[in-house]
Amino acid sequence: MSTFPDEKSLINISKILVTDKRLCACVNYTKIRSLYLWENKLKHEDEFLALFKTTSSLIDELKAEIKSNHPYQIPEIVILSMADVSSDYMLWLTNNTHANRIK
Image (cartoon, rainbow, N blue to C red):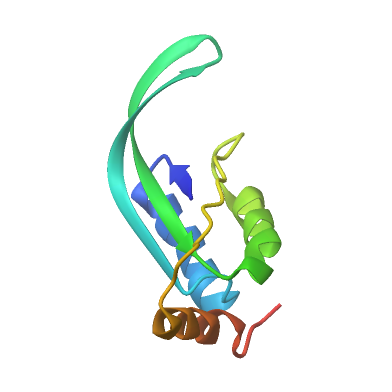
């Protein structure tokens, strides 16, 4: 999971991660409002929240790609564990991340 300042930056990195690098099978995203402190100032801004769906074996690569291509100085990168996933969905996820990967 990560947040982005605009839809364009989110789409740019998502296309790389899903199509080129195949580190994610899917990216879900939505517009949100965020309230936070940055450099001792209260910020209240529009952002985009993204959920990057991948397998546990690709997490480190995915985190590195997000960090190196993210527009924020300190990007939010949070790992949410999938404890109970249907076997059909897990098969789809694996097939779309591990098959024919370009490194």
